[in-house]
Amino acid sequence: MSESFIQGLFAERIGGRNHGKSTAIYKFEKIKRAKRAAMAAHPGAEIIDMGVGEPDEMAFPEVVEKLCQEARLPENRGYADNGDAVLKQSAARYMERVCGVKGINPETEVMHSIGSKAALSILPAALINPGDVVLMTTPGYPVFGTHAKYYGGLVHNLPLTEANGFLPDLDSIPADVLAKAKVLVINYPNNPTGASATPEFFARVVAFAKTNNIVVIHDAAYAALVFEGKPLSFLAIPGAKEVGIELHSASKTFNMTGWRCGFVAGNELLVKAYGDVKDNTDSGQFLAVQHAAAFGFDHPEITEKIAGKYSRRMNALVEVLRQAEFNARKPKGSFFLYVKSPKAAVKQDGTRIEFKTAEDISQWLITEKLISTVPWDDAGTYLRFSVTFVAKNETDEKRILNEIATRLGDVKFEF
Ligand SMILES: Cc1ncc(COP(=O)(O)O)c(C=O)c1O
Image (cartoon, rainbow, N blue to C red; front, side):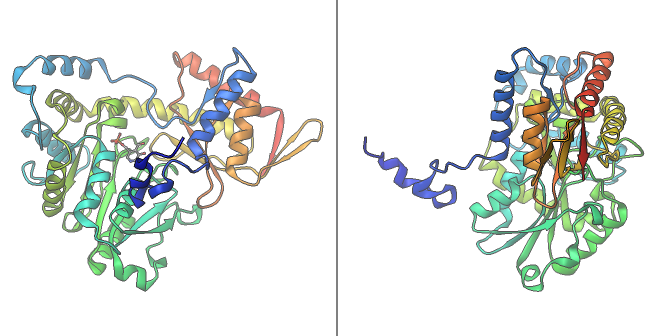
């Protein structure tokens, strides 16, 4: 059959004529395939899924109830466009109460998002011209960079290394790159490293942005999931609002990933530009969903409960992995435990299995141990374990963690 003329019409940004023809298999697809193969090879066996990047539980019943009530109101039925005042006001209250950021104007300095992913895909249209450079951290969440490239922008990756506490080295950027850089995208607590920022680092970012005329986008998707102290907002740093915005999301904060709601807050010019492009992109999130998310942002104790669960699981997982000689250290927030991956596993009969990459061991873990993880080979070789694995209750949670210990216990890892 001859090829459809449509194949010749695809834009270069998605591969042009070659779109969809690549045979390369991407990381997450490889994990899925390995999981399916492991299930087929061991029917009925329990796969322990530590690779999930979203909460294992439903939204809290009071939030679901709020959605039901709001969904019945005729005034909520139509296009929300850039939103009404409810979420904007609750976001401003949340920024003050939870993040310690006073004086966010709900009318001009907040705008809802249909999730942070949507905001990260909209913002490049407001900022990126061909040839502009975006500074992104790697490993990381690539959405802003992908869209920046769609507009002809270039991405300069800043590696997150253990030596730097998984914070980017802003002094490492070559002068010619810096001259073309327009945007710095950061994310703390960080996916995948689990690292948290410090006020000193954020202050350095503000100074860097001012010196170099760079916009800062802080993706704070995991901001409130902290195990000690208060969430650290970029906007709490003096001068931050002059250079940037922060993206908050109900997804991880209130177990609402599928609901698609969050907000953008900070610099008025940036919020307005985001709103202008957004207005030409979507028609706003259903007001009932926005109002339920607003209910969440007014009830931070929900997030504290969720973070408490992750903290408990994290304590146990750190112990299990340390027993297996991984250099696991509990992060200060998020639900990710990021550990250096071993170079080899030695079985009791002396057989030595070598792992050249994190992907190698991740594949081995799923195939041989039925434990699913996410490998990262972008800046060193690391495995990401998520504590959002599914467990029926706390007893089951302990059983699963013991099961991991048992499965890892019959080999010796070499690092
Ligand atoms: C760093 C980071 N930013 C943004 C998102 C997307 O969040 P949302 O559900 O609000 O679109 C994720 C989701 O995994 C993430 O890890």
